[in-house]
Length: 323
Image (tube, rainbow, N blue to C red; front, side):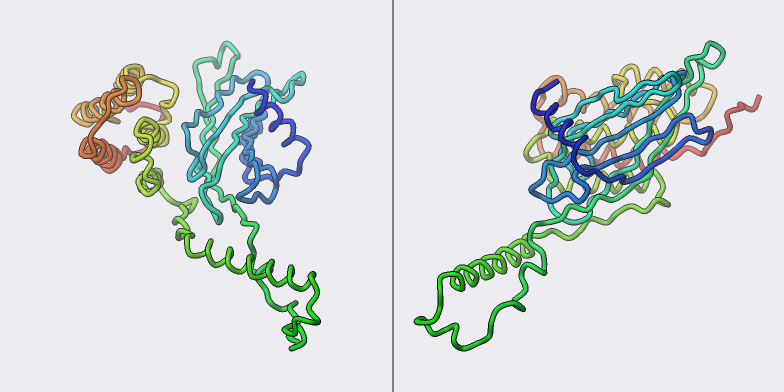
């Protein structure tokens, strides 16, 4: 483990933290929670987001996989560790050191955790637990209170240089500097992103994430990570619609799995599957073969992802297949 990240993790354990959102399975065998440290993070802080999953020892838990971004937060470092083991429970932690892009409210998109039962008679079954979308507020050191002029004396004597002492001069300069910084930050502040409500469909959330990815203009600075995030949105959307575990599979494994596992159900028509294959293989060229796409090819990839999200919206199918 990187020495710096180890120091950050230890520091997070002893510093004040706060719970953002919590979820528990219906049978109580799995509990997951997002924590943030420090409890009231600011732009200047080292911010740690910790996903903690506590589960029965008979279960095998797969921690989710994240790319380089978590919503509007850049992931600088990440580490996974076992936080505690007892006779019947095990706790895992995934610690993300994140860098905020701005102050204000930023969304933490809903997170899905997959797990399976290791007992022989239940080994083939898999389950999932989803933490709902939540919000994280990033504060700035500059506040309206710090820009107040209420405490400045209005006495005309202050402008008589013979009676002004050094302390008053320093105080006036400090207040003016804070006021200038406050209005400068406000002039560069971007409008807050529209946050998804818990009632939004996976399709609506995926389209919002796609719009936010384009707004961040990552494709202009790091085209490889842009395509990693782009394919991550499509795979997340498929996972929400089919419960197929997509993020950890290669393109070939994923296409084979979605064909074999769902061959008795009309989940993905062949024409749409061919379009998905073309999109994923084109993205792999950028991610793994160091292919440098043109601006038109980048936008073509975005349009293909958007087209797939619009067209692939299967109905929920009962586990029992009708003969």
